[in-house]
Image (spheres, rainbow, N blue to C red):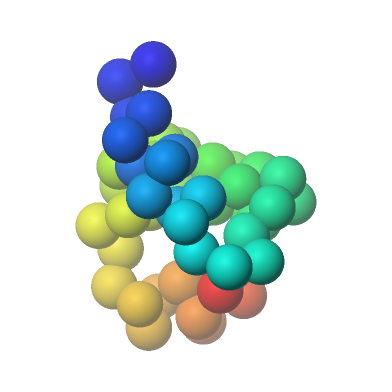
Length: 48
C-alpha cells in the first residue's frame, strides 16, 4: 500500500473512522490526494 503513511496520518485525526475514510477514497481516489487537498475543500465536501 503506497499511501499507508497518509492512512496513518488521517487516522491520527480525532473522530475519523471507516465512513470518513470511505468518503475520502470515493472523492479523491487515494489517501495522498486527499491529504494534499486544501482544508476548505475537505470541509466543503463534508469530509471533515
